[in-house]
Image (tube, rainbow, N blue to C red):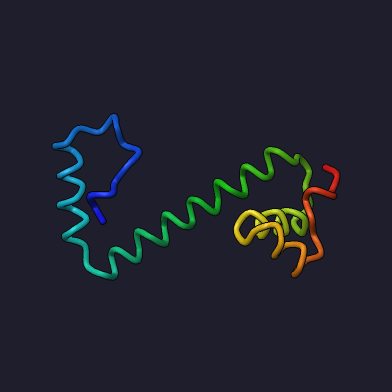
Length: 89
């Protein structure tokens, strides 16, 4: 798993090894806590991006667009009747 760490071409091998060593030392609870924080961060960035692209968007439409990004367009259409390709704004 840790050997698959990609996207960090600017990170030295020494720094990567220090990161790997720290991650290996995490308890399961610590791993879960870090994962949940990362998920929350991604969720906030996604919501921020939607708000930036659609100024003044309602909370309801924000949730629908978020659900579409997370679950896919087909699911958004099926469960919310929302299709961003047909929506204006």
